[in-house]
Image 1: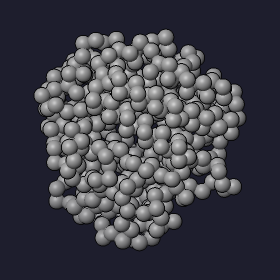
Image 2: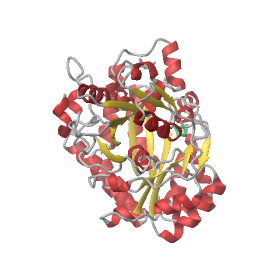
Image 3: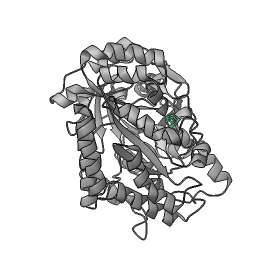
Length: 455
Ligand code: SF4
């Protein structure tokens, strides 16, 4: 069989993303676990033109809720052309009934355990409607098919060493989507990290761990980083704030080439953190935690959310200054998004606070619920003020300069590159898309130009 795997996308900025840093791992991982007798192509709608005239026997779509409108349209178009279209991923997992209406078959949960069976059924003309994936044991996973990735992605070596997270933040789908905490054998991860068949030195040098919380099992991370050290890579990952208290781990992270960690800081309000079940975050420790990571020359990227129940427009706008005060190198600023499958969705639903909005409002930059202490419009506006202030020329240059003076070379490049990227967006007014901006919200305006054919 020939299979086209498509990772759907809808632009999140007015003029598009402009530079495409890093791909998700889903498509190239699914391609890698596909039996060799099949021919696979992987398309990322973010950068690739979708081949609507494909001769593929099977179209497999993966997407999160914010990109669902585009995935549904692609499915409709491919089905019109007589193709069999299946889908998986977080949106499908938590919206089974709706998804069955759009696709010939769906896979819920993790795909590894169901993918082989689905392909066999497809070959025998016996495709079922629903396949339920079980949590994968992470053993013997092959190297992702990096060879199928477009060179438009700046970084290509993406991988996972672990899956799952022991925390239960109220807005996060990970605890339900990837239950438990599972580890890949260290030697498998090192084999993938050593893969170097890329055209550019930085694609060979940088390893991007798409883990939910890579550092949580200390014994494992120490073993992994000890083996990673001789490869002399630069690596980045997501971790929780507790790493800042572990000097031994931070030293090992530095010695093994860590250039950046992403921390989910989320809020400067104690009650909001309690609401979010983010018990691991202590506001009074933010600054010292960031300083401890900086001491090793590692850049700190951090996520912040606007729209907790204790937030006001003022507290959201003030976050721009507080983010600077605690020394974050690259902030990621999103609007609270009540994804299906999260505790916060169930709470808002119970309180009748969900707005009747399309899935395009679930892209992390729009409002799909009624905030408690402001209107949805005020939340959106205050988020945009926060975004514009944070990426103003003054704040961006200050972060770049601080990085030049304090970070190791790879981390400094990261800070320079990412802050310039967002600052240029700010200067050019390439703001996060407001899906309300037209009388009738029209997400199709935000599908990459190359794939406009089908709208
Ligand atoms: S720590 Fe991160 S990955 Fe873990 S539940 Fe919270 S938001 Fe999700």
